Amino acid sequence: MTSTTETGPGATPSTGTASDAPHDASDRRRWLVLGVVALAQLMVVLDATIVNIALPTAQADLGFGNDSRQWIVTAYALAFGSLLLVGGRLADLVGRKPVFLVGLVGFALASAVGGAADGFGVLVAARGAQGVFGALLAPAALSLLTVTFTDGRERGRAFAVFGAISGAGGAIGLILGGALTEYLSWRWCLYVNIPIAVAAVVGALVFLPRRASRSADAPGLDVPGALLSVAGLVSLVYGLASAETDGWTATSTLGFIAAGVVLLVAFVVVETRVAHPLLPMRVVTDRARGGAFVAVGVVGAGMFGVFLFLTYFLTTVLGYEPLPTGVAFLPMIVALTIAAQTSPALVARVGVKVPVALGFVVGALGMLVFTTLDVDSGYWTHVFPGLVVVGLGIGLVIAPAFAAATLGVRADDAGVASAAVNTFQQIGGSIATAVLSALAAAAATDALVGVDPSDPAAMLQASVSSYTTVFAWSAGIFAVGAVVCGLLLPHGAVEHDPDAAPVMAH
Picture 1 (cartoon, helix red, strand yellow):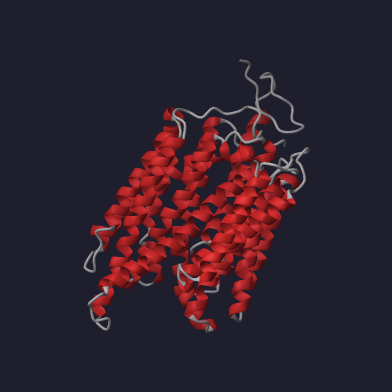
Picture 2: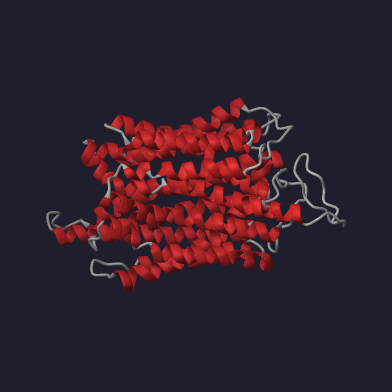
């Protein structure tokens, strides 16, 4: 087989006789593109957790009730999760660079409005706007990475960095949110996005190529598919979010969940029949990519148990303030980063299946460590070991999964494939939010049967029982992920289609 260098539209194939200088410059530019994309991704994933720590303070400042506070989080999830596929296709149609820039600027402006909010309505609207622009930004960022790195070794290193940021960004958000809330104001948990966005915009203008791999022959937007996907995902996420306050058997909860499922089934049917689908089924039916999408969704679901309920344990049982709570997650960040950086070497030798399945097994073991927590458990004896093990497991999964989920896609599908990755992660987390919260509430209720609810010690024990129940279910989620991905993902190195997602023309 003749070896050729992959090129983008309008680029000249390499014959191997030209000077290496242009290639050196191109190599340097690729890593600078990674820096810009990583910065934007950090901003998006930070926002998933940074506001959570600021929420109690914001609630006291703006004076809204407990039944309303969930919408500060849900408004972002609704807009972000439902519009990701549309944002990904727009990146393919309009061009990744312009969509990336619009997402950055819009996200910064929405953050500024949210930080200056003088009431609940303005804050919810700003969070929704963050979700809209995040849905443009996230798939454009990942697709830029997809079309920039096609060499196997470089691609593994690039996605290791991207995966580490995607996995550790939530924990970094807890640390940063704690510091900003404790020493400045909850408003800075939103304002902090502005300098990050400015730096990313400058980097994008300087380092991203002018056209940023817009596909010249990309088809138009699939309007029926877009409407069905947005309506289906909004309905599903809204129904799941309502379950926490209205209950699982409420008509509103079941109605919205059922409507969401029906609309999403209709979306799949439409996508198999239209000429130019929003989400081509070839993107998700490929065995390697399909398994990777499942892995990303399972990671999103399993990580929820760590971030939210371990945060509750640290604050309610160990009595940690916001900043120490965030810092307590540092061992997980370090372990995740180390595993993510070493996973490409493992992938190069044995393929994606082994590190992903092994990572889920390790993550499940870490969750089982958390099931031993009790009211008298200490951080170093019980929390620290679990964080290290879970971090190693997630790090082994997330970098190979992100890379495999976008590997081999056609150039004009890179944006929507990248959006599908983020959608699976978002929906996995959203489902976990509802299901695990309901399981935790049921466990706490069971623990209080026959116990005086006015007894503080009994209430604390009930809380810990609810947390350990969630950790046990999270271990089960990771275990199922290991089995499913072990069956779906092909054994051995994934072959790369030389015609797929070419390097950007510079």
